[in-house]
Image (tube, rainbow, N blue to C red; front, side):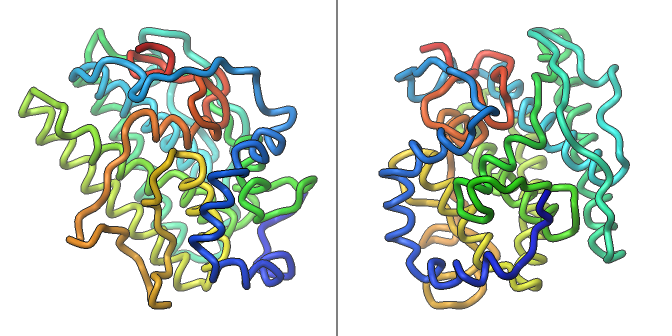
Length: 309
């Protein structure tokens, strides 16, 4: 089992990080098929759908869609920091409750990073409880979550590890940070994209607050990755997300076109960009227009699940 090592594999790939547009085009054109191969035993035969959103964009569906993502982040961070997941009382609801595969305490070497991760873990657990409380009887159960095979598939497809290597996100600090980067920006863009569809102003204000916290989290991860010189694997992850989420080219690594730090990914007006539910599902399922796969091997719960028009 391979721990993340910034050398020698990534040193040989350093030159590729300077070819961002070409790499993104390649991933978009051919990477989906390669990703399916990389998933190997971890992938399922999933039905393909043509729906752009994956369901009706109403308040309950939007909050439950967010809850799926919060379950994923909470289970990842809680295991990394405390070696435990969410309490059973925080995971029941409508839909099928699934198990969590993988995850254990990270052997943090830096006290600062341990404390960053601890704060994020507590925030994500609180977010789960907030959304469940807000939804009441309409809250969804935690779907099945894969915290091992999914990261390996993503790392192979991105070129971070070899085609037969295993990526363990809990093996060391760098592996943990890169694993967090896989979905931190995704949560920010998902909240941004759904905000305009919320009709209840109390929900809108609250989710704006959650978005702000998620953006702080993403900023922490991006800053630490930059400080550690993990430019190449971060760019490879960004390229992978851009290659799988759809036709747009919006994702950004931690280095800008000018070669300087790019710690806050924005458009030309310095505004965070948005993703639709379908684009988000493409990333967390690790394949386009699917109903399940990747981090959610049996799909997500709720109305925005990628299976309904």
